[in-house]
Each structure stands twice: as structure tokens, then as C-alpha cells.
Amino acid sequence: GLRPTRHSPPDQAVAPPSVPSNSVTMFTEATQQVLVAAQGRASSMGHQQMDALHVLLVQVEDRTSLGSRVLDSVSGDMQQLHSSIDAGLAQFPKVSPTPEEPQPNNRMRQAIADAQALSKEKGDTHVSVADLFVASVRACRRIMAEASYSVQAIEEAVKKLRGSQKVVSSTGHGNFDALN
Image (cartoon, rainbow, N blue to C red; front, top):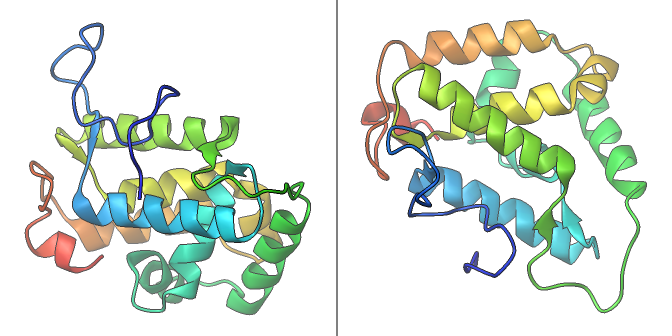
């Protein structure tokens, strides 16, 4: 699992003093599960770092995930997306021994920051899977385009799915979290 380390932990539960208390620093349980799954995939693939592609991979592999359902609702080529993600991940160097907990690379850190900004814009206190998914899609824009997916269409589909609900607890997007 994700345990706090001396490096920047992706799931800081407590805001450091330098972060204003109204900023989003926490993830819902569903979002943490996605991050743990993505980290696990990075590790099982022998990757030293976790990338936004690992997040996309776990979302498209789980046909019941919010990401899969959103992608099914917009036009694009899911088979091509799988191929493009696999090809993108094949370019990552493999290391041995494999780190148990690959740390987020720059693109993943940027995606997490983007997800936090998306959540904050909506007045959420916790980062939802939807925001992490949108941020990961944005970070992997080129791969999405290869599979004929429009980032804008995905953002609209997520917005429609979410409605005006706020995410204000670790378990909760209310009914929205049940969609994850």
C-alpha cells in the first residue's frame, strides 16, 4: 500500500503548515485505491516511477471503473487506447530489483496537482477519482488523441456524470463515489 515515506507521499492526509487549510490535499478512499492500483501496476511492470499512464491503465482495465464508463460514453477507439497505453508504458525503463513503491514521476506529480486544482475549483475537500481521471487524461493528451478520444468530450462527460455534487469526505462523493 501507499505508506508515507520521506519523499513526497502522493496521499498526504495532513496538510503541511505551508499549505492553506482550504486547499485540497486529501484523496477519497476510491481515489487512493486507484493510486495504489496504479502504483502496483508500475511495480509489477518493473517501473521505477509511477506515471499518469499507469492510472489510465488501471482505469481502462477495470470495465466497471468511472474511467471506463466515461470512455464508453464518448467516441473513441478503446482497443487503440489499450495499444497506445501499452506502447507508452513499454518505453519506460525496467529496473531490477523492482521498487516496492514506485514514486510518482514529474508527469504524475503534475496530474495530481491538476486533480487537486480541479477539486479545489469545485469547492471539494477531497480529490475524487473523476478529477484524477480527467487530470491523467490531460497529462496523456497525445495518447488519447492517438485513440481518437477528445479530452474536451471526456471532461464534459465527467461533468455531466458528476452534476453539482461536492466531495467533502474521504468516503464521499455520496452517490457519486458509488460510481467509482
